[in-house]
Image: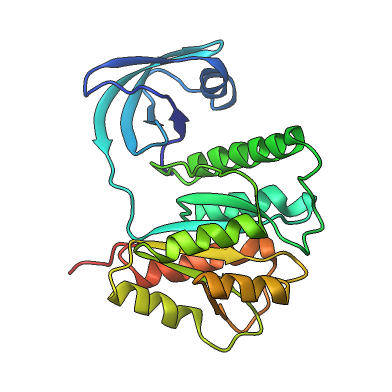
Length: 258
């Protein structure tokens, strides 16, 4: 089993010592019950990942010595998930699965047919974003990811349409997952790879589906609707399935050698 991962904003070079305190230190000392001599991974969530050895662990502090520090490159093409707000009981699950599957950024979308609502005050949207960021952090640690996806500001359809227009003018492919389309998602991804696209944006609708006027607005802005597969997936699982397909079709997943 691979070593557990703790977060730290600063990670010294090989041979350096680091004290991890606060919630992360307490998790390592109390929950993981780390012992001197054990191996542990420490990452900053922004690409640096270090193999470390525990020197001491007690209370809310874990001291480690860095054995091997590596700066990872972000995978390409990058993948941004625009996720319509799922029902409350599945909201954080969507973020968890997308993060474990490799999402590089997640943007919450208040689509017309969303049952869940973050509108009605900035505090509600801020709390929703914080829950998503906490879920992303936990999932990134579980997956031993060097990168933790940031959670963007909540957007409505009008704002999203403007963002799609901006993305369409860069080296990006914007794909709206839609169960009534005939064009295959995998074909669009393959075309994007052939064109050297640097970013893929996946727009995932709510439980009730993307409204027709939203589809048309996004299409006019430069997005392309596509069918992910033969099954109708929940909004909380669609992004993870799509990320798996992208990983297999692009250089994001390393191919076997030999």
